[in-house]
Figure 1 (spheres, rainbow, N blue to C red):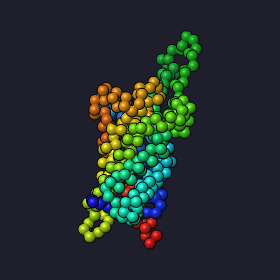
Figure 2 (tube, rainbow, N blue to C red):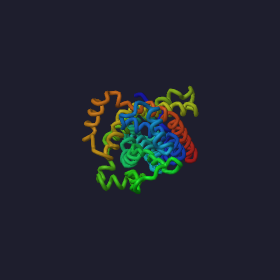
Figure 3 (tube, rainbow, N blue to C red):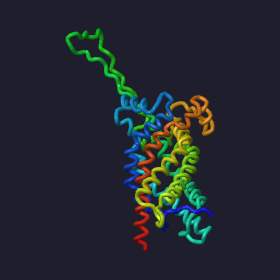
Figure 4 (cartoon, rainbow, N blue to C red):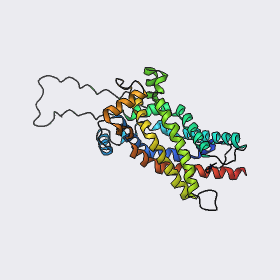
Length: 323
């Protein structure tokens, strides 16, 4: 049987999520502008590329447009990280105990893959409402109001009759994350908060399986001879590459997920996951399923480097305190 290096045993998986709190919040805050650009590219065919989307967003909404809906992911990232890594740890421990008689036994590739898959599935129930609100706010564009020409000055000609008061432009439909969640629940029911969850299940299930499996394999490859664990540089490289590989397999369903979740602000275009896939490919070609791939990979490498360094650090600290 072929074994790969599992993370060190941890009795309670929640400790790992607590350590990810600063890195998770910083990672979300730093990478959020790229996420906004990615979502807009995936959902709006009018953008011809990354720089076109960046220029158009900045021209119409300035810097604030890149951070729409940021507060909700920042508030939930710690909980989501805790649940994701905790589920993975507990599933892996139970599988090892069932198959090999001990939670400390080496895990096979299949064990790590199943535990990662379970981690992705559990994550969906927490992230789906957050993702709906985030995508709706990110795709809710606002154009600056055009000012009426001033009537002051020497060449100004007074109007023959009083001009009617200018009608203010309609405000945004969603005023913030909580207002967005309440509006979606009121207009579309509770099912609206889980719109696109089928695509999210397909995205996170196999991407988290790839995530943890590739990390374990890369750690085994990067571990020096005579040692049981890689050094900090090995963890950095393994974590960054694992994040890139996970997003490489997740991007097609990420595109469909974003389109389904954004499909609700106006007239609905898609009847479901399969209809969204067929319609998108027919109208824009197979390349549409890989929109935002470069942005996902660029964002994933540095963020997951930090995530796994924090993860391994707290595992070693906790094991040192317990022994």
